[in-house]
Length: 110
Image (cartoon, rainbow, N blue to C red; front, side, top):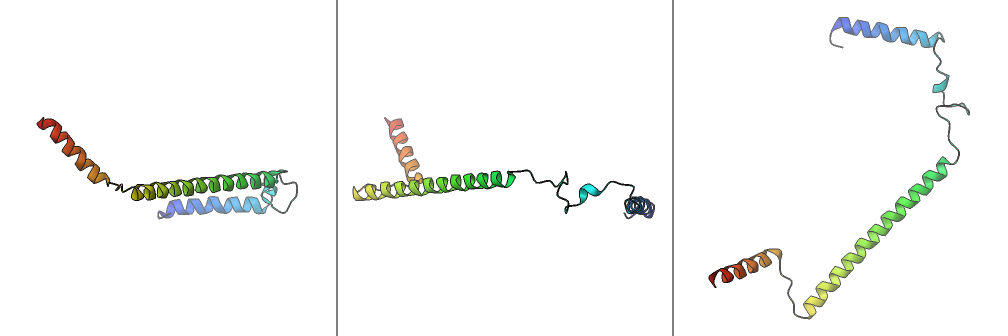
């Protein structure tokens, strides 16, 4: 569009297209939305019901997934409480690695 020659060519083509539409040489009736029997914008029977059911199924699935996550979190909390009650201290992954390293060193020394 910066080049004047290409811009002029584009504008001429665009104006000729608009003139063609304005003179009625092109079939643009399909573009209207206010017609009931329009083949392009025709609403299929039962489509809204199918969409609604699909939405409901998706929502139910999401709710189930969230409930499963909540239950898993509760289980983890219960496990932690039990470990604390029995005097077990949960070790951090770093501490576990250090313990493994110490065990490996002791085995090498033997």
